[in-house]
Image: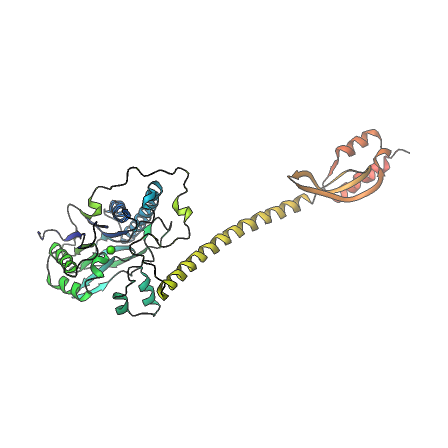
Length: 414
Ligand code: CA
């Protein structure tokens, strides 16, 4: 292929898979790789939806922080779009996608990342990973339980802890801003490269093959030479003196380059709640080619991690419910106290009686009670007072109520 352009995007289905679930994009300012997964047809849809949505951020930004914010927002929007798509197409339930993307702003790249695709910076002959894998084995490495070398060949290295999809309404997305300089080569790749081609090999290719397109093609070939069991996608960005690394016109590769295909006859379920609400505790896609359950200690720890997250969410919910209940109780107590500062005079069993509270009832709750029964028989009062007592006489305070009782006492018929 030609070596024109300072960036390149290549995607290959590999030698084993029947369809390409990866998507890639190299544009004017934006560069992205997404690796989809899940369902019999979901992975390609997931990565395509994500890349198409995120490609909308391919424009100039006033500052790297603006770009970082735009990228994060786009990933969250893509996440919501995936949930919406699953809502409309139930057969896609469980689909998800990794996303590793970067936006160029002058001498900086704003990065956003979730999953196990990777962004590498090759500078002065040294290859360095700029993103952290959101994989289960990476957690084991971080906690000191296995070494990075063990992780690289671990049979469960594809088990993902975080992705975009219909499983989490607010996924944790890593973002950062990194400086760049002429001579830098930035590589974004799916695990179809990084899981099968060693970093030494990748570094050697970037050190020896000039031209973004040629280097990207060569990296795909390295993966094919390793048997390419997975889809492989490469986006390569060369930063040169001109300060430009754009690809004009932008190129889209992988499933995002194809028209989106859905099963047209999928049954709509109008009463179905959004899956986000139905599965608030589900953090890992279950119908996922990356997810291979096995009852070893790693899975046990994985489950523990899921439980910990679920517990955290349950605790948040519980706290919320308790706060609401406490609020209602406080309001009721205050309201009740307010009513109990009032008194009125009425009658019980023919006797003039002082009540504390107000005469309104809230449902089954009575907001007043007998405070004091007097010895004054209502029948002994003049008719006019009798009617007043039956209708009850309001008092602003106990003293006022007592005053009313005194007047009634004085008014008794001789
Ligand atoms: Ca993959």
